Length: 345
Ligand code: WQD
Image (cartoon, rainbow, N blue to C red):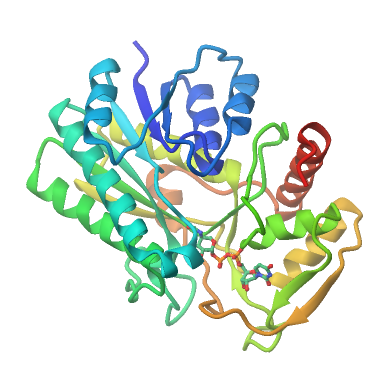
């Protein structure tokens, strides 16, 4: 009997890619999402990619404890991957209560209900943002977390602590936190990908929209950083590689392979890439000349951060495989799909 994994926030960018990989790995999946930050595009794409026209999508809010209870009563859940939450760094500064209320309440509901229903395995979608501006890179899981630079980043730190303290207090559950670096790209089918609302904050969707003529010109925020080419360094992780890391982590939990009741893994490539290098790679991978200019630094940006992924490589048996060119080609193919089929501008 296949194990069932609940993917909360599963109709979104990362959740939809994780759902595809879970299904292809033989798991049953229940997708639950309040659809507040996505439409049906990715969920429909997941059904096409997997051929699972019957894939359940429960439209619900994880802040509603009764709805969460109803979900766990309806489905026998063996593991939860928790994505549901607000994630716009900038917005969180202006709407801190919205972020603390939503992101913490939803996660607490998931843990409490999992316990009540015998679901022992909880995987939390965390972020490298918990490291802030690291003293040095690559960062390991033991690198110190820095005071969060946004309420969004703080909710990630607090949720990690909620999971850590819960598995310590409640022996019937165990947890893994995956700290993603910069997820980019789209599924090779171009049927699912990132769907930013309004003007994209993140680099790659802004690049693809500029290449598509939706945006006039890419502003590169700062070329006077103390880095080889003056632009910021990040660890850009392909979304499909990232999604596969979740399958490896869920398998580790379900097969009883965990060595501690709470484990943290950095999910990155271990390779720093600058903004300029990424722009150059995008142009080369897609044969496109991108319109860009150098602009002043963006407040809150860290100069450089990239992962030491050796713990995930060793303990999960997972490693990033796709090249940055392959990833940037998938991002462009997705943009073309959007522009062609959805007339999205
Ligand atoms: C990357 C680099 C920008 C846009 C954020 C969140 C993090 C996580 C990933 C959720 C920076 C530069 C960007 C543009 C640019 N999200 N840039 N022009 O800021 O590293 O991380 O997304 O978990 O929590 O903080 O990603 O893509 O916004 O920026 O020059 O139009 O690209 O200055 O150096 P970031 P990003």
